[in-house]
Length: 269
Image 1: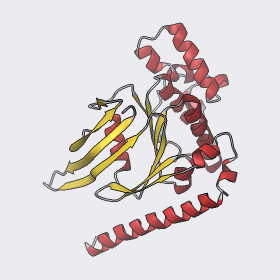
Image 2 (image 1 turned 60 degrees about the vertical axis):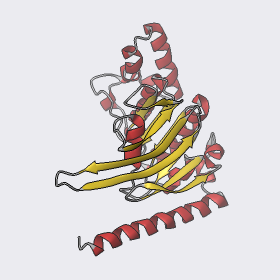
Image 3 (image 1 turned 90 degrees about the horizontal axis):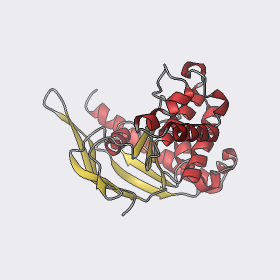
Image 4 (image 1 turned 30 degrees about the vertical axis):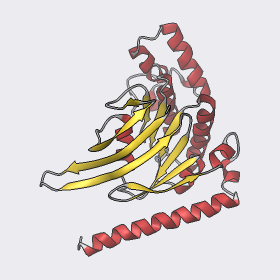
């Protein structure tokens, strides 16, 4: 199938003392091209580990991941990553940061400049293209990171808590931008978050993961991402189904956290 296929992925980290940590166990799912999925769960449930395996930064202990029927065996421009901190090149201005990928791929300079200007216009930074990274706010830096990711034209965009460090108002604006980019580009997006509200807003599919060993606890298919495109997200949050799902998932994760704390107390830690 075209899209992303995760087949029985398990990940074990071996420790120096001879012990091990089972971070993921038998995670399987299929994601069609163009789908937007948010992944939620308590700390230690393997969210970021799964994302890093999809990115090719880690090799799973067992299982495989296929993208468009091809096995993932390392990093590739087909999969773009947006981190919590933009991981931008401080010595380059905005335009050069966004154009870095096309330059490395040997894209014609005129074509690359056209692509960069188009993306900067989409993310609202056309007037800041000559600015140094340190002159930008946190939200603007994340816009640069999104544009830089898109400049490589990946099939899949992986986001690891990309909005977690932003203030509430900027975060809401960036959530709207993510939805806009999803609809306009048709990219497959997987977004990791600790925020239940964000997961509901930015996931037409929402995956709740259970803690160690990390595994899929429950999956939801939701209308809120489509409802939020071009809309006031605060109005979407008032939707009765949104409120109901938020409370259901909050209780689910609270119970998981209580279970984790019970295990820790039982070990006398």
